[in-house]
Length: 114
Image (cartoon, rainbow, N blue to C red):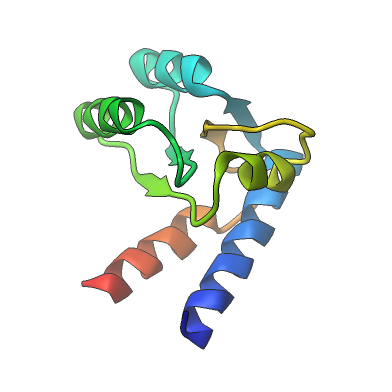
């Protein structure tokens, strides 16, 4: 893992925690799918160990809705801990980013990959 990757992950974790505290987020696959179907979603994040069928469904729904999607670098237990929860979280959906820069961080990470 390169230094820039580590910075990106820590920056993403920090912004994700800010979104959870300042914005509006729903946790879990069922709630994520509901938000995407309602058109409320701004961003979807799923854990690295999210079942393939579920991640494919998220990708399809995000593509239809024009919503960015991001695979979190860690498993569902670590995503849950990042969210401040004592249980695993397969996915989350950001409904309101609050006063955070999470979308910009993910966009710049995507453009760096290209």
